[in-house]
Image (cartoon, rainbow, N blue to C red; front, side, top):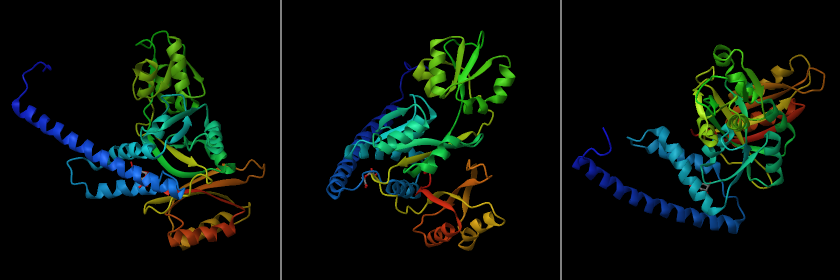
Length: 367
Ligand SMILES: C=C(O[C@@H]1C=C(C(=O)O)C=C[C@H]1O)C(=O)O
């Protein structure tokens, strides 16, 4: 079938109806945008913040519940995230720092969470994301914290310990890695340049298909793609978006060893500029704690959670680097401190820990 084929009159009539509906939708969206602007004026007078993640989560949850179809429920969140992003941008610009350059999965995560109507602030690494978000040059920072294949992103977790920033949200991405090159072939390839995490995620594929090609770790996958775009002897490993960003061919598609490879990101902000999100009804609380190394210490730590029936959805440990075999424990709990069992469990937990820091409490990912 070609585009020059005669078009059935029924199809033309349906398209006519779609065009009319789109105009109605646009008028409705503009009415919504005007209301958001009015909300923005009130916030300005009150001196309160624009971005309200718990409100946005409730808007999406509410619409998913009443969705009568045929639109799939999974389609509701991305559509409304963009609508709310556009409305929010009329209240104030949202400046978001993430690990750049353009085309990284961190950028994709930032756009997925805040929508496209943001001011993008690509940074060289996680340290810089924390730095610009702490200084106020960015309103929010997005950093990877965990990969379903490779485990925790240690630098991010270590930075959480000392930062004044707190987690305001989370988002996760399906990570599909591709081998990218300026020529459309594997011939004459000398090195694959990518972030060490991506090289590890594609270890099996690289060993099978390119056993004799050097694997060269670089600061980000986008940097690898940039290098590949300047030298045909090099390849990068990155997203399809990076391929179009750097004008590269996809010479190996979805080459990550795990087809369900996901990366989870934390969204951070500063307590002087943003209140902690209120209860949305589907929340997560992240904390980091440590206890001195004595028999039963770990058990004592878990007792308050069990006693108050609070579910733990994540438990990671990181060496405290004291040389004493001491550890920090990164814990995610289901619920918000305003939910009585969670608040009480946290208060009790604090009394048995030597170090106790709530990293954030935020609505669960609405994807
Ligand atoms: C309009 C508001 O401001 C922002 C935009 C929202 C929206 O478009 O629905 C929701 C929450 C805020 O992040 C609001 O607070 O209600």
